[in-house]
Image 1 (cartoon, one colour):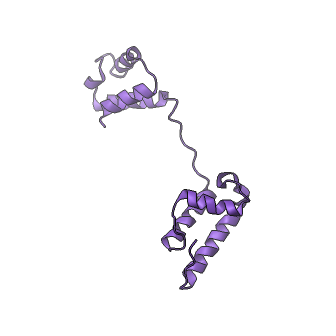
Image 2 (cartoon, one colour):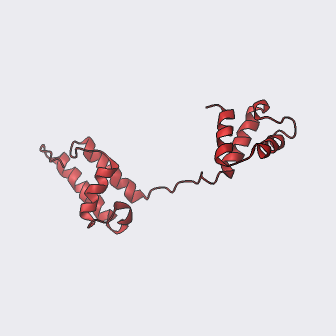
Length: 135
């Protein structure tokens, strides 16, 4: 997608009218041009940055807690080792629900360390002996 296309998309998502867009182009170009196609690359990047900041929908996502990331990582290692059949976030959450009395994994922060230890133990047992017990 070109910068002009990105600018138009950002303009749409930020609900910026055409008149306001023209005014922004004029301000960015220091009243040199009135259309974004005639802006320099640096001016286009500046305009795109301005529109992205005005867009209420582009909030930064919260980073997943490290313990929760570790649980998903261990699940992936179990799948890679052939100890689980399905390597998906949903399968991991379903398994973890059994150990949190039905509480969703996201809400079971008190149990995360216990789940990590369960998964680490399972991984160690699976790698330690030749038999691989699949779930």
